[in-house]
Length: 383
Image 1 (tube, rainbow, N blue to C red):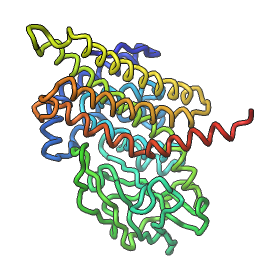
Image 2 (spheres, rainbow, N blue to C red; image 1 turned 90 degrees about the vertical axis):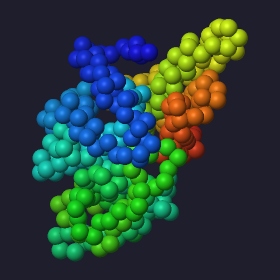
Image 3 (cartoon, one colour; image 1 turned 180 degrees about the vertical axis):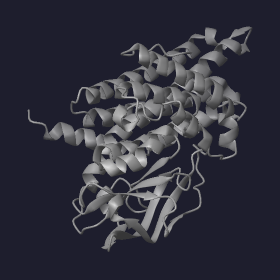
């Protein structure tokens, strides 16, 4: 079922229509097969870039579409409804690009953005480490100046499309201070000394390769640093607010796909001589699924509209990430229940949706971390 959307312009309507067409023709038909084969769909990112969708939220001067963030997120939701791994990859790519746009020099913009927004280059975001996930200040990957380059040593973990990306926005320690001693570098994939761990064997999102990044005296030119030394924490946290909205939109699209599947199945499956959707118990379950999905959508759109208005949205981004991903977990689980035994088989995508939903409660800051962010923001506000 196509979601009824309130969009700000005719151009936005056309962009969403284009996204739906691509999702229906190019994503949904191959998602289950490629996920089962753990096959990374690099060609899809090229297609999305050439269609103008990777650059939607960025200014025209950088080769972007200059669309409001609420339009970009609704595009992302439509992609997620077709293929969650691709949507998460687009969100991560946008996260890496947004930091370059906000903090890069004109030379860095010219070097990186045309290919990244046009689909020829894919960006990744390297923040977490084996012992420093939510504790960003605990990172130990170190960069030491040596002439006109940094010597980088350490390991980054849980890197989306690790080994497949063309550049990695990487956060490193350049000073001793826990929070002011971090810096941001963008590291090209062919950098000597940069290696990759084997792909993680994950519960879901198996079409999205996840690896460690291993730096063994990797040489990264100082010209590839974003901002000044010590700006890394601010760059990371500033980008994460927008990234959390990306994951919120992805989770909502996944919930919508599960709801659509369950509703369709309920009209076709018969028991006791009638469609199972005629039974009140199942109707109530479907109604709750619809309410959770619509509530999730409203939550992320409110945060996006605050962002578009130039207003503070950090707390609302955490709320959206929390609400939308919890909704995705509930709705996808209920979809399996609606399908009954068939929902537990791989003949239908319901079980894949449920497996994919779980990680949305974990990455971009666990939902426990989101609760801390929300509570701390509430408690430090003046009465």
